[in-house]
Amino acid sequence: MIFLEYPKCTTCKKAKKWLEEHNVSFTDRDIKLDNPTAEELKTWYTRSDMPLKKFFNTSGNLYKELGLKDKLPTMSEEEQLDLLATDGMLVKRPLIITEEFVLIGFKEQEWEDKLG
Image 1 (cartoon, rainbow, N blue to C red):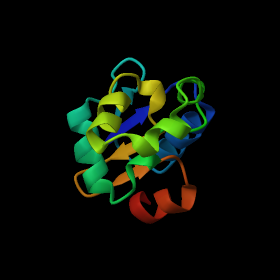
Image 2: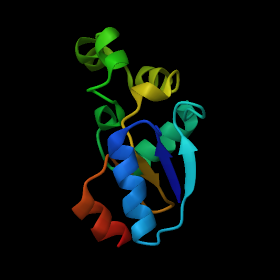
Image 3: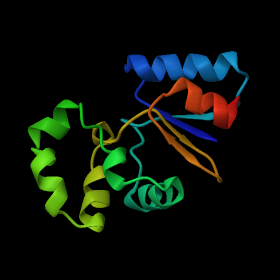
Image 4: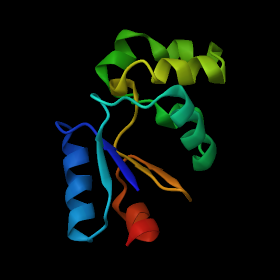
């Protein structure tokens, strides 16, 4: 299982603490230093059964600076994946990636259901 996080993010810190307290083993990956590739993102997006928009960090500064709220609806799936792959700060975090499922963001009950 891969845990993608931005170490300075308070939600990511809470999520990591939850994983450690529940003895869930994971491989830690800094989303800023090791940004997901477009291929990885496509795989995860397909596995997640969620809309691609859920993978965007819509509250992030970069998302707002690029005006993505207005641009995303007109972009193709491939364009969106390529854009996400340009900067880890565009990607919603934390992310949990397993062979069976993908969790986006930290919702304790959802994590308990899937990982607890």
